[in-house]
View 1 (cartoon, rainbow over the protein chains, first blue to last red):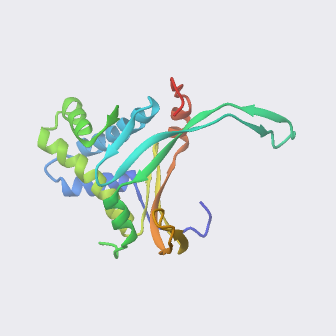
View 2: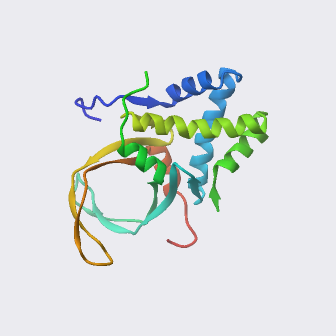
View 3: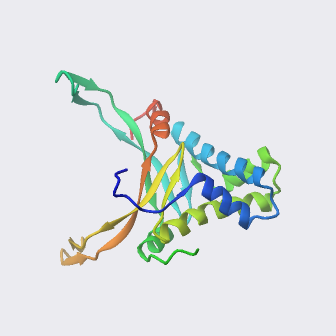
Length: 107
Length: 100
């Protein structure tokens, strides 16, 4: 991030706070554990090569990057970089529509 | 195989002792919070996973693939996801049996 980036952000702990407020019958600790385990479920699904499909939100999958020749920036020496997988997100229709139709902040 | 909201609720039910309705509700609200943040111009930073952000795209020329007719694609805001280093490292290690 550059110094000029003032975009407000929602962090994992903000998300936990908001959920704890909206799910007030649950205690904070449980919401915190739930959010952490949701993120872990998503990470480990991708780490084992599974897709994630969340209706209204989007899908995550892995994209393959073939092997390529790279260069050591210090020595200029050529090095063979192996193929690898990278996570990819495709927003779903509802998220695309809502993101494209920005609203003022709620609080 | 793919992970769905139903799978996620089921795992919360099994592991955290939330009841099924609570588990379903928290999964639903989790994604809703991310959507609300993005539609109100926030980026979303989930440490250990990655960041979601809004990018503004300028209008660009497009084409109707069926008719070949030129039609401009209007300026719009789109959601992008940048995986965090931790997730990238975990995924890179995935030795897929076949490349996609």
